[in-house]
Image (cartoon, rainbow, N blue to C red; front, side, top):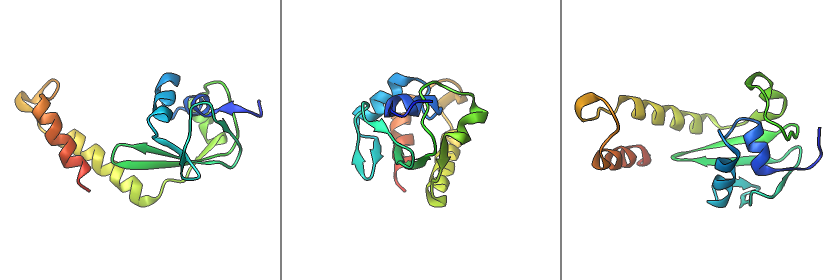
Length: 127
């Protein structure tokens, strides 16, 4: 166990992002905040930090329980982070998932057209 870990590495290790480059990109775009301040990917994580991730129309809030440098199995994640996302934000996420799954595309298969994608984004972002 290490005492200092970069935030992009920690976010990847606890499986909040699929790849480390995606977590670094989220930091770069200002979608990761600690104490209401956007953070760079190189910021170190400390035990007790509350991290807010902006994920489309909703925000996920997690608390650092322990620091880790290497990716772990999904069953072990609860030893390193605590999800403290509010019930209102979880409801936004559920509605977003429902909108994504129930939106009917032309032909019923494949990727949406550019117009359909814009319509879907407009529908899910208007809460």
